[in-house]
Length: 568
Image (cartoon, helix red, strand yellow):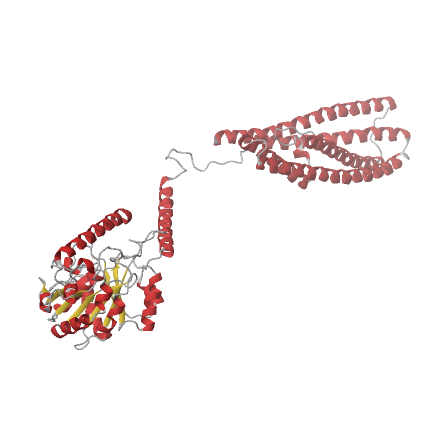
């Protein structure tokens, strides 16, 4: 392709030189014929007048002056002829690009530059026509540019013509004056001088055309292409598209899209994702945080355990000393805003952390609507708190049960009652709490969430430290204002929050627009009451109903949210 382009460029330049030479040759033939005719006239005139000597000195001076004027006048006429040809070339030019043949005879640099620009523009127009088509925007712009350049050339030709005509007029005036001087010479000398003058003029034009022809011939012989190949082409695979660049750009775009999706999800997620979310909207103290437990066992701390999550529970245990926990004030309540935030998991492991210090710990399962502690610790739920409060059992020792963990005792919920709120406000409940406080060093109460029910609010007078469990990507942000109101209004004693289920940023982000039911489903409309009694038989019936309903909810939640079965 480059070789063809180079050959075409040289051919176009040689075509210009060839046309110029043809123009000069035509003028030379005409001038040669005229010169031969003048020389024959001189010979005939001398023979007829019997003139053998030279002209007088004065006649020679007149002849020289007239000759100069004639040569200048001929040069002007040639320039005018060239301008006529250039004008015809510009006005009547066809679609094929090329250069005016007599461009080398033109002596005006501005006109030469304009003609060269026209040539280049028409060359681009012809090239673009084969690529873009007649009606492309590029072709329209190039055609407009060609028309403007033609208009500039015609205007420049008009200016040059006016100057040449003025110059020709001055030459004619000077020539007429010299002619009048010759008229004063003798008749024979005047006739010979007239013929000799014509000979000198034609000879000067002849020499001028020969000089231009030689210049054009040299240009023709030394034509080189505008294109120079620096490096020979080679085959080395595709130049574009470069696959590696697309892979890199694709990777960057993928990363940016991923980051944008994560940021958008964080912005539109209505769940608590970071500890800062809690601290910005509440003034409640921070008791500690717990990372997500990547295991199926509910117990993550025991003697000698040095994992991160175990150390976090030890840190929470230490921080409770700054919240008013001491030998006299030793009751801790754990609650949350909605179900599933990990308060039971936190209560069990926090209780175990206290046993490691040699303290005797009681873990009370006062979440009477949906108890979990007895199941986590593999302890029979009956008899329990509800049995004791309704006088089904009289001795408190019967509801205090040992666990497999030394110094850890659990007081289970017992049979699930239809009226847990009424049981909590009974006088027997206060007596039970006082009795348990007298027997244990630390009492940890696991109660129902404050969002759907008010059980936790009824326990304010019995607890010394109130811990709210807030879980990453689970607790709705709207509940933070409620928690802050509790803290400001001092509805709980020594409130603090634990941030549970902490995950690495960006790994688990709640999906945009995903909604969770905040209803707790704690026994409302269970369809039983005191009429059933509190015997084992009735409790088994109601317990089975609760288990079936709870199982159905868990199955639905599993398929809807695709959650795993880890404990938090």
